[in-house]
Image (cartoon, rainbow, N blue to C red; front, side):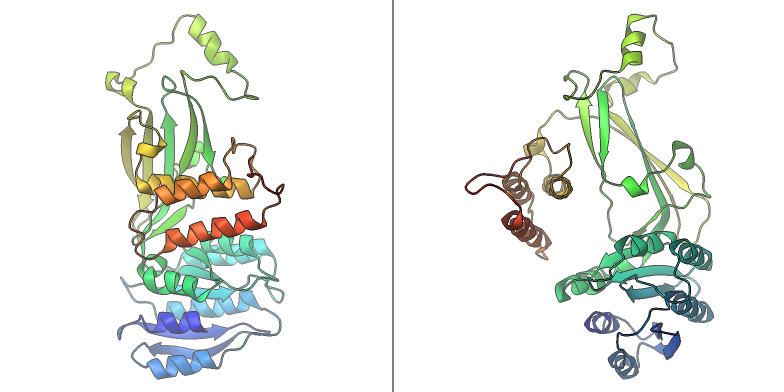
Length: 357
């Protein structure tokens, strides 16, 4: 209730709000109402109570129907689904729910999923629904997180500036011997899908950024232990070179990044291409944003007990995150460092020793 109240106070007169519920059966608590009538909206929020079974499919259907009936051309038309994702009445099969969301997304109404609770939380289900609904997903565990998502980053949460965003990275084999994408296991696309505008991808909100980190092995380095050498590249290097049409200026490049995206109301993607070279610096010479992102990625790998951590430990994550603090106007990076310290304090280790992996 606190989270939705905060969002309500950010709206302006031209905005409209409706509230549908789905505990046991679906129902309309508040018909489409001008945000100028704040009292009516807040009273409806106050009457909400959690309990009973969860008929999510019927509630979602009702919410989309209301949004479609009040559709604003050129405006932000969105369903905000607040749930733990445990749909146990009506349409309960995940694939059926995903199909329902996919169909409704074609109407131009986007989806934001807000996850609440712990016991029955279905995190994977909610993320999948948001992905297929041309939307986003956030887990709300504290009042501070609610303020971050619905107040500080409201435009990013509710206003989509690009849909079906796809990223493709090509490494120069003359510079890179091997590479590994860190994370995004459930976001991978087949190479052929990059140019296929019928394939669904992710959405970007106003002011949001996407960070993809790769671990690479430069050609002059020895392959990590346990990684076999590439037989066919070595064989090719011993035989007559294969002649291909290569731009001579590309020889110094490390990688090419291709980005495809559609306008929120468009169906044809646009392509952006960037060629990048390595400046030869180490991690301590990179930007604060890069250092902080690296710390977050390392922390995630430690929690997952990844075999690729290569000696990274909690103190090193904290050191890297502190080096990447930057201005930290909202205190989010400091909050992350506190989270790392808490995780470290609960992590099983021998007394008096550092935890290494």
